[in-house]
Length: 151
Picture (cartoon, helix red, strand yellow):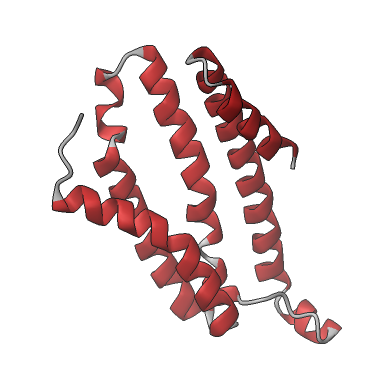
């Protein structure tokens, strides 16, 4: 078992807080210029990739096949958050008028593609984790992963 170093704890904390902060800022701040949210999002992407690297992706080759699959499943479940964290700058979709929707058509397409990609990545992650849990004899948690995929 790996010791919990401060860098590891910070990495875990960051990956835990990103979804919460995304929702809070996305609903609280609303739409802001792409000149602001894109650099912030790119910084977040770098921080999330560094956190995933710190938490174990770097040791992928040193693990056995079962542990490698768990790492793959975990990464596939974290990547959707990486994509959807851009939404803090997009805010909610502009439902109030068709003109606002048309004016932000490119951003709405990006939102759609990111949501589609996030859904696919999350499903793939749950499939991998479901399989690994079943192999480990964790039928209850495997069933939970299967239900998450179905939802």
